[in-house]
Length: 410
Ligand code: KIV
Ligand code: ZN
Image (tube, rainbow, N blue to C red; front, side, top):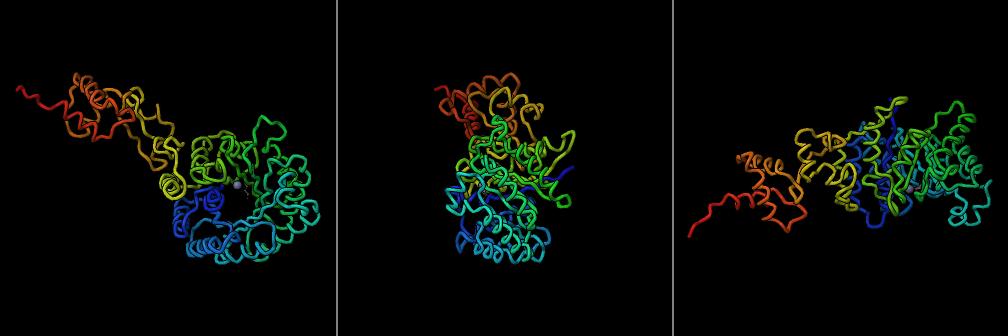
């Protein structure tokens, strides 16, 4: 079974999402949960962004440093010596245990390079020199290095330059190359541009250039066209990726990053049975609900129908579905809710059936004769005819008692 590493950037890329920022204490609480679910790497922040961000990363590095088993900690830095130094300092407490990662990035898409690097973008020789120098700085301080050619999926005519960027990073000591679909518009229909093909090409080139180096290929997809899960999983199943980066509940810039709970359950459901090569993550999936609820409460509200962890993901209402599930849960429930810390539940609504009505009545300790189910169900629907979004059990039973109430003949 091949182990796919989960790199959680909820605290870094997730907090780049407008409205999702959390207090200092909540960042630390999140890091405790991430350790509980057993993700491999937590990107704790961007230490050069502000003094507060520095302190958060440093606090998490200290906290994890006191644990025997904890995720590794990554922190983001631009290709600038002052930022790299600041990042190394923030991660210092984890260096002795070999769990500190500098995440260095530089754009490689032509337009983005011009827009964000200005005239520096034209000096490719200097860029390659700077990549080598900054990676050396981190490696000699005892950090591992992940390098991201930002907007990798949009590199276009810069394929050869990107090859040299990656090659320089590996030669200088980067152990992970992360390929981002930064603006979430990579689509397999775009033929040659499809970034998994490029990842395969680059992986093959680097294998030839560095036959004795063990490189981790990582994928980092944004979700602007709703393609982030598909692209991330293609990079694993059809590409070289053995690391997936994303955020819980899919939060992140614009339409967000790939949702980690979806990746983890995709790997568990489809990867573990994959015929030619089985894949899995080492996450404790039963804690998914807890971490997803935390993000919902403290970062950004989650849609009720959100896949895997949404409130409706294991909730059923319609008569046909409820009736079948009461006999065999698998028929309308595509994964075991207990695998993600949830339970199947039912909501009585206008489309519910008599079996469901009977089960609620019996659950509350009352007898419901088979022949009575239909008239009771009808009465309850009429009683609450304006409540088309569904009833709580209390509202249901209130109507049931009204049905049962003796009628006084005055
Ligand atoms: O989306 C992106 O390109 C990023 C990089 C900084 C890795 O978040
Ligand atoms: Zn990103």
